[in-house]
Image 1 (cartoon, helix red, strand yellow):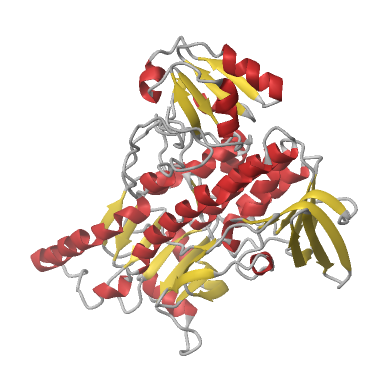
Image 2 (spheres, one colour):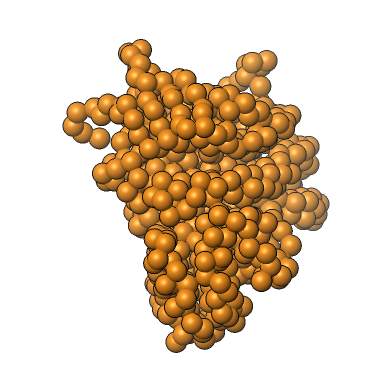
Length: 543
């Protein structure tokens, strides 16, 4: 960013404490709708070597598409999807392949009917910089870097916060609402009396970033987006950060506080080459945490992302769940501030998002129990029938990892069927499943995706407000009532595609700004009551 450093306004409709992925995503949702937002973030510069999250999920890519950013993220990503799509389990990168999981993390190279976008492997700092750039293009959003929110005082009529700069100067900011996206160590959670509950992983881990010519130049046992190394004294995973010689690794069971650790030796063991050249750039010790707050909101303060839940990294869901939170609270807060929905709409945030975080933490926690060292001592490198038998046995045992890499049931299948602001229709939603995804247009579900023509998704037809998709039936009563009360509603006539009615189970489908179904039917019930229900004024019982 160039030009004079922005200053914190004394008063703003929305203050976002924390400018990581969740804070920036919320600012984009609000700023695209013209809401004035102040985002306060202590990190002035992003560290490209501390990659943190590396998986941008299919669902998050759909949100990026909605913001007009999906193609740009793929352009900036140092690893194109075409480079590799499989996760490989092996004795070492240059050793023996044991098994592989193809098209992991939704990394497919050809369009599929199931979604508007494929997943993307990309380091989190690249995503954050893209979001920072997008925020800078929104006139209503101020991004204040090098400062942090150090005090938050919640109240029934607004929030009073203290913003402290790097030089210690303070500014008192008054906001109508505050989004606490300040992570596990921020002040927002304590300000509303919320508490984490859960557990931490039993094994410490060590993350590394390094450079290696050997790994760049020598062919691996199999091409992968990353490699899980099993069978040795140490186990874990390794992959590329880019195609220019920068790599990452996670070594399981390494406690740097209790043992002397040689990072170069660890990488060489994973590579399977004692002479592999290794230049270590960064080391980060960490332990997985599986924590969820007991409440997502105070009076005018809402917790978003890591401030509300801390996920282990297995499956790559943590960052993506944060973005989902931001999208959910973002459009609702804009609706309230713009006056077309009552404040009671915000009551739906926690009952919609907390169960998603709970299921996601549970799924990732199931993978936390896996340690690659459990297979130590098995001679999977042995030639001949004996080695083949060991490798076949290991390949079978490793199938327990499949839900970590194939989790579209979790990524696309989460729904808000029990939400107070969707209208139930008596249908039974598909059972929740981590791996398997069954598209369904039941109220609360993500609208089942369809291509209208090559390159044109039905999601591209959705507006910033509600959208009524019409394959049959009369939309006029709902359109008239929405216009009368100022609820943004666009209508998309899809009567030329009757197969979509079969896909969605109704001729009229009302879709929320976040692409989830609010209501469906073949004729509009009382439009006043319906709009009251989906904007949070009251609950409409099963139609």
